[in-house]
Image (tube, rainbow, N blue to C red; front, side):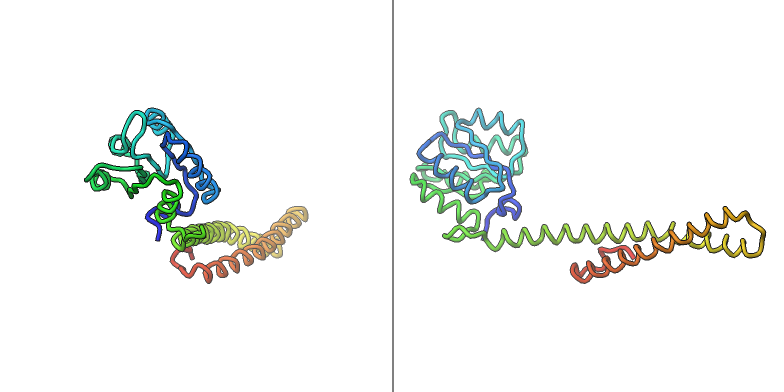
Length: 234
């Protein structure tokens, strides 16, 4: 199960990777790009560069080294807290003094791992993302995507319902008035050109009624798939 919010675990995220160790950076960057092809991944080699980036851009996830050339991971967490950045922070370090891991978690780190090996760090990231060993998307990520699609479907349902409602009211008025003028024309000597125009309006309203019926059928079809009739205007 992923430790991350569904949209981040699903790969649709802006990821900031802060690490200066090239032996670690390159394999993890390759893994991130392969595993999260839809993600926007930014790499900063120092805390100062990361500060500048975070002041200018929003991120969804921060991967931070335990020790940076100009700071520690605790400095990163303090900065994130001071700036009220909501992105989760995952810390990976070669080694941490006793008690530091607990302190980092208390300071707000989502998860902390101590290992010098890139392969072990990738294994840790698999667990954070809720990925199986073969790299398949986790159930949580798939569930997040499904929920996203459900939300889009509900929004479509609401929009279709709103459009049918908005069209129906003026169309009823036009159709009713056209019929009234037609009946009035049968009792009065109205100009033939006016009568022809009224006939055209009546025919157009009839055609629009047919199109509205199609929208209503679509609305009912969407209702069946969404299963939440309350989301649709009547």
